[in-house]
Amino acid sequence: FFCWAGNMKFVALLSGGKDSIYATLLALRHGHELVCCAHLAPRRRRLSSSQDDDHHDDEDLEEESYMYQTAGSEAVRLQVEECMGLPFYVREIRGKSRNTSLVYEERGHDEVEDLFHLLQTVQKSHPEIEAVSSGAILSTYQRTRIEHVCQRLRLTSLSYLWRMSSQRALLDGILDDGGIEAVLVRVACPPGLLPQKHLNRNLRSLRDDGTLDDLHGRWGMHPAGEGGEYETLVVDCPALFRFGRLKLEEVVVVCDESDEGVGILRIRKCRVEKKMEKQESGNESEKGNGNKSITSHHYSTTALKEVVDHVAQSAKSQLPTSNSTMQSTIPKSIQNRVIRSMHLPNVRIMKGGLCHISALISPIACDNNYSNNNSNDKVDEAEAAVREFLTITQMLQTLLSRLTSSSTSSITPQDIIYVHLYLSEISHFAKINRHYQQYFGTHLPPSRSCVAVGHRALPGGRRVMMDCILQCDSGRYLRTDAKDEDSTTDSFLQRAMANHHHPLRKVLHVQSLSTWAPVCIGPYSQANVLRSSLVFLAGMIGLIPE
Image (cartoon, rainbow, N blue to C red; front, top):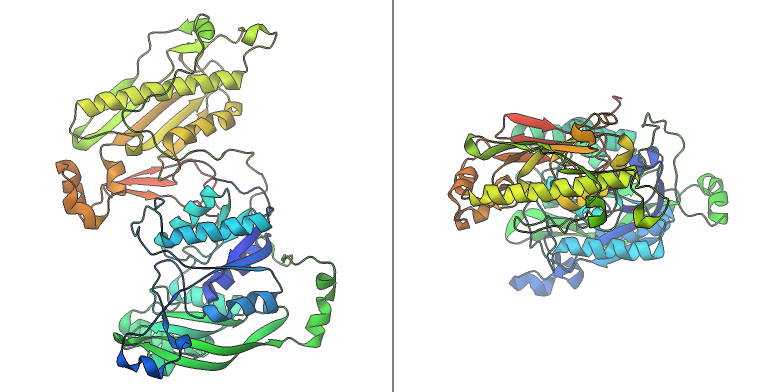
């Protein structure tokens, strides 16, 4: 997790369509600086019919992708290099959609890894890159995978279209606010949109003549195409395409012979029509000074001014297993100079696998009069707090192991849904947070609230105390595919998977910067929902309503 630290230099993930272009424009309006663009190009597959001989190789269909728009890929390089005047990076999609669950875990030859390698290449050429923009709007599948890749590369995900506005208002924003001109390059919405009739049609004209509203009313089609009904290619966006606009000169409609209602527009020839000389001369200073990045200064935003200082560091996201142990972090020399107490945590086990563990504190507290390594430097208060926290996690791991032995489930930190963290001083937070992330990970972590209670306010002068709530098997529930439901042998998990009305656990974990979800600046989820009824909210920096 890498929190927003002011305006950032970013790479735009472009498909060539309206969503990724508009998302790039919004990132600029929020004060970030566009350095370059990246694109994942499809591999082609041959048409499987006797009519193959009647088609040119360029008219083959792209391979299907769960993650990326592939139609119109031929023109993206022209969009970036000639219309925007920016560096362009492209990689062919070599992987398949092997891991299709909402919770992504690294898997070889998955198409998500192509995105990882593409952005890795961009980073080598542009080490100043701090963020990645994308056009995800409603697809949790797409957003979480982009966030997963960003986390591995220490990048911030910018997703300003996420959950943006209502269906029709979203389309109006793209066309009117963004000034975007786009044509349809893929349709998959029979009988509403047909390849021969609607491909290469202007999206604005389809909106203005009522076609999209009519299809929404009759068939429930999303006006902005967020159900996969259609895909677009942007031919002009005045705020981004400073040097020219696309002109499609030769196109061919290619239908999928297994489904006549699905078709793509193959672009066999296109060119860039240069913008007016007046516009070009206005940009000469930009081209002459060698600065190819793009910034936007005309947009005023009410973004938060205060910057949260370094609250998260890169760490392993692997969660410990229930039988793993942590090495003692308290030197024997310190153990000889400690304040001891007989305080024990409270553990309450309730029906349905819910458990509440409270008042977890270290059985020892460092004496801050102790000098480390026989030097004159006293033990740092924050470092002492870290040692106490590591002892608490060791105690918690022992408790989870004992709970596992007394039940039929294997209970792990993945089952913890909420954490209350109490600190004597908020200045201890940054150092403790790194170790907190190591223990709980960054993959659907519990929601958390952290409170500074004051010096010596905790029992025995401790610096850290923790409460947590866990739901047995909820971690495995989140990470088990519905299609694998029959393969599990655990009766409790089987019953939870079979209940389609009230999910055992749902998690809201949006790591991207957006205008919809409060900023997630640490290793926590914004909300955990238990059995569709109990919501655990994290302490968060709220959004300023616009």
